[in-house]
Amino acid sequence: MMGRFFFVLGVVVLLFRSNAAAQSSNSDCPLQFTSPSRAYAFCSSLVRLGATLSYTYNENNGSVDMAFKAAPAASGGWVGWGINPTAPQMVGTQALIAFRHSNGSTIVDTYDVKSKTAALNPSKISINVTDKSAVYESSSGKITIFASFILPSNETSVSHVWQVGSSVTSLSPGIHPTAQNNLNSLGTLNLKSGATSATPGVSSHQILKNRHGVLTVVSWGIMMPIGAMIARHAKTFKLADPAWFYLHAICQSSGYIIGVSGWAIGLKLGSYSKGVEQTSHRRIGIALFCLATLQVFALLLRPKKDHKLRIYWNVYHHSVGYSVIILSVINIYKGFDILAPEKKWKNAYVGVSLCLGGIAIILEVVTWIIFFHRKSTDSSKPVSEMNGNGNGYGNGRVNGNGSQSHV
Image: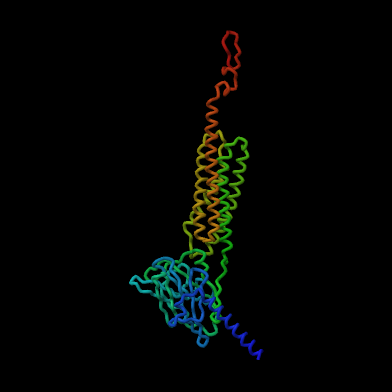
């Protein structure tokens, strides 16, 4: 009797825990996905782009009933979900893409994503889609794709891709944003168990992207401005001469070497993503490399201090140097927008930039104070003191005819 009691109790506990786990896993799913008209066996909130996927898999015939919900990247944009039969990547995805038509209706169609650069137009796909529709929610601005399709037999684990975009021309979706969440919105899906796994946050080239960002910030964004500040303000203090020049040279040359390393990694990353080009970021980066390299070679042609061309060389050197710093800061912030790291990293650089800017302002004020102080001191000195003679007329010797001689 007691054995039966504990057996029943154990079954009840297991059922309770199973039900609780199911409720927990589905707690983030929209209510309409479990309504009587739209009931699904599995529901999962995807880790990127705020998307939700619900589905039911029928093992008998390999059919799948699914609902994918997400918000377009902008008003008039699109949402899409698909399966890639070969690999978890965009190219090769057999996709369902939905958007609002200009007449107010919501359209969904099939698209074969054959490349990163070719325009997308409605086309047949390798997956047998038996039914499809889409609904737009004005309250949330989200679009839900409903579809039924049949997979090849025994195929229960698939690579799926989801995406959102900001524009549609006719029936052709525009390119999606290139933020990290967009580039990593893919993963694997086990249709039988309901388990979903996104690709790791660090993609195959993410380490290179991180290195590119770190090297760029340290070199162009920190070392170059510090080197310029040393040249501008340290020489004001006589005790720092000529040490300031060597500090300036070391800081700038080290920054250049590190910066070129980051620039080379950036070019390599560009070759990996031929379909996604960061035009302005790339052009500014190339301009920075050219200007910085020009600065390095210009040192070999620097005239001596007393040469009549030295003043023109100084104007050139300062102009190009400050241009490099300004372009560096602009391009670094463009890089933050592209890489889209955690906010703390961008905030950290903002803090460093403000700190360097504050120090530069303080040093600028001190430099001008010292300049005017020295100028007033020099102008108040008597002529005799400036000449280094007691009477200002020479050594005071008298020649043979009684006139004073100045030597």
